[in-house]
Image (tube, rainbow over all chains, first blue to last red; front, side):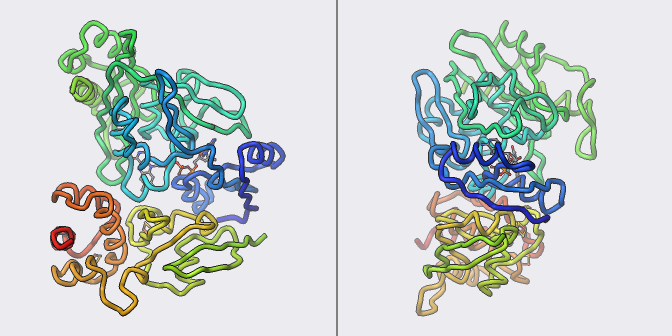
Length: 266
Length: 155
Ligand SMILES: Cc1cc2nc3c(=O)[nH]c(=O)nc-3n(C[C@H](O)[C@H](O)[C@H](O)COP(=O)(O)OP(=O)(O)OC[C@H]3O[C@@H](n4cnc5c(N)ncnc54)[C@H](O)[C@@H]3O)c2cc1C
Ligand code: FES
Ligand code: FES
């Protein structure tokens, strides 16, 4: 790991001010991705701004028809939250399926979506539920937030404060986990909004989380596992690697979508 | 620039100045000489370095020491009673022969105690899922699971 200067601001204003004036500064949340990248010298920030001391970034609260989760909230706390479990159980289950117990005790919602790993779980939940990402500068709709492989709409020095998840009529998440890392080989989040509109987000395809228009159309017509499983996606745009071919990943999308709908229907 | 760090480790207050690059596991092993916490992979995969940070099992190779500022840390050395009596989980691992070479054992025991804190009566499936973040290259997990079951039954 290359040397860096360490900062531990006590509040968000101090953190954004620091990031504003530090050239190659980076925020540190749970460290579950960033520390590994720094060990490998893939990331070499001049400064680390540790968000760990900022209490206002953690916590889960109901806000009318939405649940607002602070960026620094650990995966384990979302998984165990009674509020999330009652109103968006699919999101609690998604958080409980990330990595392993130790990773869930350290990793955070903000870190996961800022990193936007193409096989990560939270991006599917955020996009699938049509959530809003609230930053130190603005509110960003999920549809505008994830912009590609490890890319987001965040500007340099912009910090995620929280994510606001609208409570859906029903939602479900199913993932075919890589047995070693538990990252998604394919993960599908399906959601039927209060209005009846259907959103389907797919992670693990290889090029970043995306919405599937084919699945949304099929499920809007009939919100059933059979309708999801009947959709056949082209393998174009899916990546192939030693874990799975593009064809296998495309096939898994329909299978996982079917399971996610079954989970949503309870 | 070094950073002032103060925290509690196994019930004792600890103050130090560290290079911020110091990993928590390095701090425990090299600065405090608590070498019961092992390093198996150094990449956050194997769980040999598992400790409790404010009561939760985490991988200490995947955290900076400075992230434990003000925290309560418990390592395998802190589990036994002050008179040396083994923690019930340690006793169960011994009784059920839940180890062979012993390399993974400190991490297994730290994960297993955290698991029972959250879920005092887990099913076998829940134990296996709960120890997902810990690898053992010797035992085939069978006796480790038995040890956790035996500890849960005894408590
Ligand atoms: C063994 C292992 C298994 C895993 N398995 C899975 C899995 O199955 N599914 C899955 O989805 N993930 C998995 N992960 C990743 C895990 O979920 C991480 O928690 C997550 O990727 C990063 O969160 P973090 O809080 O640790 O962020 P950090 O590592 O601290 O930061 C990651 C990035 O986000 C930036 N950042 C952090 N917080 C903010 C913020 N508030 N605003 C702006 N930028 C911010 C940082 O600057 C950095 O660039 C796994 C990780 C490990 C080590
Ligand atoms: S040494 Fe930390 S997880 Fe392997
Ligand atoms: S006992 Fe040897 S690695 Fe587990």
